[in-house]
Structure formats: C-alpha cells, structure tokens
Amino acid sequence: MRPALSFLRRLWPRRLAGQLIALLLLALILSQAASIVIFMDERRVAIRAAERKQILERTASVVRLIESTPEALHGQIVRSASTGHLRFWLAEEGPRGPTMPTRATTNCSGA
Picture 1 (tube, rainbow, N blue to C red):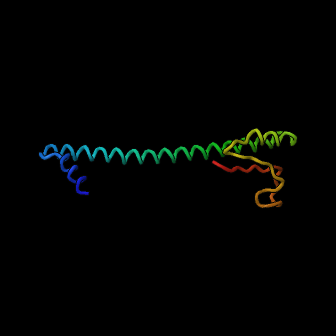
Picture 2: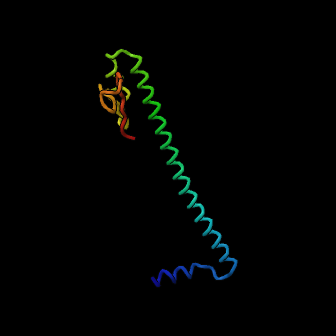
C-alpha cells in the first residue's frame, strides 16, 4: 500500500495551478465516465422497447395472415414466421382453455 501511495504523491503536482488543472481533468474524466454509463443504459432500454414493438407487430401480422388464409396453409405460415428468437404455433385451445372461442392462437417466446 505504501509504494502505491508514494507513487501517487510523486504524480500529484506541487503547485496550486497544477493541482487545480489535475483536479479539473479528474472531474472531467469522471463526468465523462458517468455520462457514458447513463447513455449506455438509455440505449439498452431503447433497444428493448424496439424489440418488444417488433415482436408485437410481427405477431399481429401473423394473426391477421392466419385469419385471412385457408386452414391448409396455417402450418406453413407459422413455420415461415418463426425464427430462432420468436416461435409461433397453432393451438386448438386458447391460452385459458377451450372456453375461449378462437380458431387459431399464436404464442411467442424468446427475445
């Protein structure tokens, strides 16, 4: 611990002007680091919101397509619309059981 402290004392300027410049540079570096962390988090939140929106739009499009096509094509449509992060499938029952009147239900998982 002592060698590190003596090393830092050697780097620290002795004159008041030098100390002020060093302190301002240190404050500038810390503020830049804080702003980078804030902007990285903001970017992560924006990307997640865009992903959610894309998943919802894609799901709505698949449901509309399934409702407007013959039943023979439904399996092919669902397979074509599915990806590694988003999977669709057809079910005879709704998410709450057979009481929900639906012709086909799409579900997504992932992302």
